[in-house]
Image 1 (cartoon, rainbow, N blue to C red):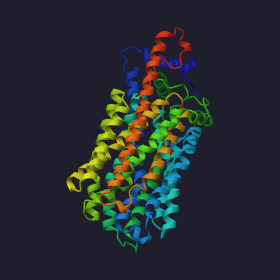
Image 2 (image 1 turned 180 degrees about the horizontal axis):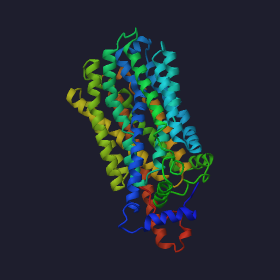
Image 3 (image 1 turned 120 degrees about the horizontal axis):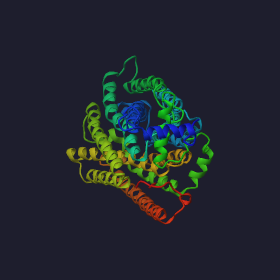
Length: 482
């Protein structure tokens, strides 16, 4: 594989930089814009993939509104266990999945294969007849889905500069909002119109139809998704070199070269870095605070409407949340601020929880649902932040992203039991737990913000004081985004 140190590569990069300003076709700026347009167009399919990922993960909460628990004879905390067991499987495969992706170097193969697996399991979930069956199906669904999201974040971080990452992560992750909004609309239609078709309950059709859509889209994704900058088939050599050089200029190490760092070295470096563990533990508290997502239709049902109206009412808050997430990520990239955007998002979510604690007024509680959904946007900014922090070490970054998401998802296991039906319909204790955990995560990430800010000041002093450039630990101009 060609690298930046090769004479041929260097000539290409010089040509891109030094052509006359009037020759627009070969000017670096024009080529870079074409590169980003081409890449963004291909990457946009991730939005659809992630929408289906979240739909297949959360359709159980929609099925609950129309006979799911009754038909499977669930009682007590068995529904909560059915939710949480997915994340046990999810946690198990995240780090190995990203390490394997770093080794395989073929996201265009691995990610769609994960989709085929979880789509098939989603379809099979519709034929379960008891508690044991749904628990087994949900566990394997978690195993199949585990490599997808951290793999997507790693893929995005391998292509975009640090001031481009948060917006792209938000764009491709808007599937969370689309799935919650339009997934509810789709579920409303299926649950309303498919009852007793071919002798099957409507909630079973929900699993059949949505799983079948996932399988179909996964096959198409194999031909659309990119791999990494150095091995994507449909890029020209000039585009590949530009993609690599722009990342190197942004402070990424030349670790996009094959053989630069093994997956096991990345694992060793990640687990020995305390920053990775702080990000990961803080993410766990953050996800507990966001655990309302798995119970959103249930919370919306506390407004007192029937199943169809309840599912329709679920859509607008998620559309609003998606708009806020996009705006927050755009501002975060433009101003290169991560923690402050994240903190504001958490503050709005705490306000929403507080409203829901103190009133049962329908209008007030529905407005609070709008304010809750935007917190996912803050979490997406957070994912961009961790990618930025480990931008120079791809193998380590792959493990760090997966480890953060792994420990983060243990928050979903805990959070599944924070919404006991005995605490409904007010769910005051549930909201209080979420407020406390969001407070802890905000403080922990605040500590990381202050530490990285201190490192930036130290880097600036070193650049002023050190005369020999080879003694610097970071490239000239490198700063941690905070």
